[in-house]
Image (cartoon, rainbow, N blue to C red):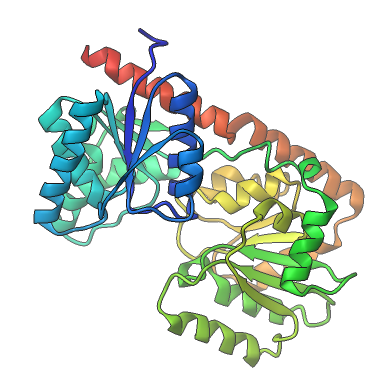
Length: 381
């Protein structure tokens, strides 16, 4: 029974470029490789074609809705698929679709699993009840120890009920030797980078809590250095934040040194084009994929000492941590990282990559998730 394949339906609002979406695609591929069948209920997105290419089938729908009537009708759509395709596991990766998934599981006898990819805070009892749907499963998965501790405290759940499975990255893709010089040059041309200047990269959605404004302030303190900086990512808030960001850059006279190119489709090459990578979030990262990907590529990472980044980055050994919001410390660490001698950079890169290989690969994540699936199917008979 331990090795018996399982059929799994994952439910997620969209399949765009975030960590939860990428995880859903990776797990679907692992289920198929293991001999099971995989579905993803979603409205679609950038990763939809890849999901299908890797063997997943898509159930299209507006599963992100918070409308109680739509949640109820979505539950019946999911339940119909579960009955028709003999699905054993319904795995929710977001709160609103989790309600439909849970109702469908109750109707069909399928096992219900929920993964916390983010930190859901609640200001009142009603919001806590809404968030609590993620704790009603046969298994609760958290993407870091930080997230698990938050869930335990917020919902008064014993830590033993929560399985920590860190986000895994595709180590075959995030390997320096796998990235050609041509790919790196393509990225540099797309971004309009000048030859010979060190590059400081902040990858991530252009949203306030990712810390871009503090990053700009820190760069303003490095005016004596010859560098170029890139803020790579999609705008996620109203257009006003992007305008505010551009105004901040203009105010400190860094318009010629900072690029905002939008979404990046080749992150391994982008990281190889960088001399230093920065993850300056001002709110806790539930996992923080950027820090892990940078370390896998042997790039010095400067990250805020907040949330799960304190788990993924070993200060002074695999990267550098600074107090969130402290732009003076951030500026000094960026300067320190840029000034590291080649031998010190190489030592840090080796330590960082070794740690990623031990703890943060897709294979490790998928194996642990499949173990959870099999365990709850076996436990419930």
